[in-house]
Length: 185
Image (cartoon, rainbow, N blue to C red; front, side, top):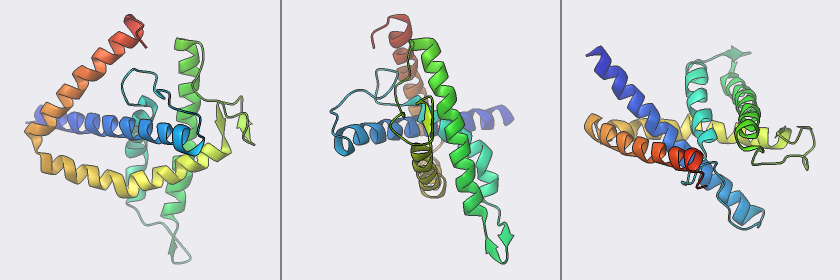
């Protein structure tokens, strides 16, 4: 029973990973097409409509900040927990983005963004402005989206979560193979 419960949790977290990867891709494309008006380009390192750095970032935030989010830390009678969570999101997502830029540079020879136009940037890899945006987005994610996704996974049921996560895993693995082995991206 214990192994089955772990598999169920792993499948749920994989679904969250994929949902946030897809939402991250949508966010990136929205910025590129609607906000900056640069035109469309695939914003992920893989062929499909997902930015896996968002999926990894989301899972990292879930694991590192869920307990803090659920605590009440008062200062002068006012809970500062949301402020601490926001600061944690900014730090974690900034570090995640920095590591992702180095991994992309190592595997692809470049990374997919350039923050040199922003003040307070480091090598164009990270900058204060996007870090603050990730903090805001992370608050929406942790306090609104993740509880909704948890309820949705419960309503789907164990069998459907298993089927959907397996199908998505096959798609993702095929995409990774085509992108990195066959070099189709």
